[in-house]
Image (cartoon, rainbow, N blue to C red; front, side, top):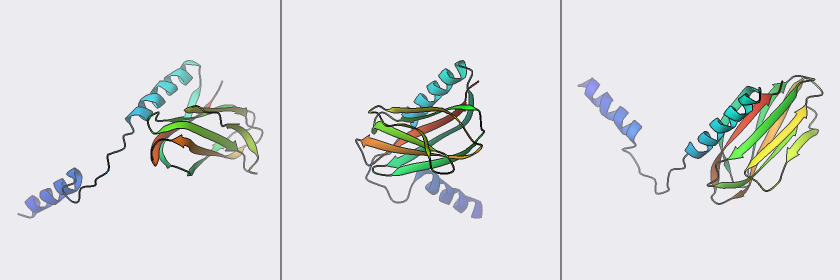
Length: 147
C-alpha cells in the first residue's frame, strides 16, 4: 500500500498533476542544436572546449560566469542566443581587475571575443540578451582554448 501511494505521489510530481501554468514552456532545443554545431566547428579548428553552459537570461538582466584562464594562452569565448527569443546577444569579458579584455556588442545573435590572457586568473564573462522578443530566452556560452 505504501509503495502504491509513493508511486502516485512520484507520478504526480514528474508529470505535473498539480497546478497547471497558463504560460507556454520555453524550450532549450534551439540553443542546444546551435551549441552542438558551434562545438563541432571549434573542434574542427583544433580548439579545446573548456566550458559549455546553457542558461536562461531575462530581459534587462546580465548573466555572469567566471572561469580560470592561463596567461599566454589564446581563448575564444562565444555566446549564442536561441534565435527565437534572443535576436541580439552581447558579451563582455573582463579580467580579475575588472578591466575589459574584449567585447562584442554588435546586432547579431552570436557574440565572439578572442584574446590572449595576459595574466593567470579568474575572468568574468557577462552576457546580455540585448534585443529579445519575450521576457526570457536560452543562450549558450562556450569557452575554448586555441592551439
